[in-house]
Amino acid sequence: MYKYSDKNENNDISLHDCRANHIELNGKILSFIFNDGIYIGENNKQNPYRKLSYTDKAEVRFDLTYKNPDDNITIYVFTEEDEKTIREKIEPHELIDKINSGMELEFLNCYNGCGSVLFECWLWFKEEPYHKECVLIISADEITYYWNHMYEECTDTW
Image 1: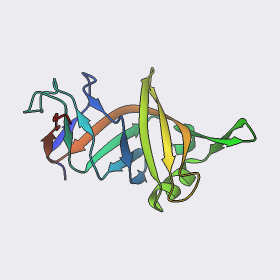
Image 2: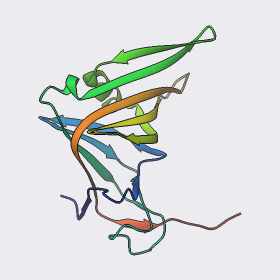
Image 3: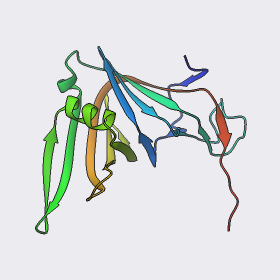
């Protein structure tokens, strides 16, 4: 159970540079677990610091639009090969298995559309090539962000 939840209606929560360490798919709910947390913007009504802050362990739940996960989730992984980039589509269960077996999914950029979200991401591995670019497209009726504690982002400079 989480202490805080937010629908991010003001676009003041960010997954930029956050890494999902676990994925769950229960019925029409797709959940990403971020052991190192997510970012909460200064204008979020639940942010007591009134500046960019981060959370402890967080979860982001997507209420998928369609009953079949394959109709809601599209994943493309890009591989460099002989000065060419090859795009490979992988199935949702493959991504879930990879992340739950030790890979991490780092979220870089997010683009919101009508009923869907496109994320530019990196898949991180423990061996070479260490990471690959990927695109994750999710069709969802609702997205909810959950966490328990928030911490003020350190702004000290060197």
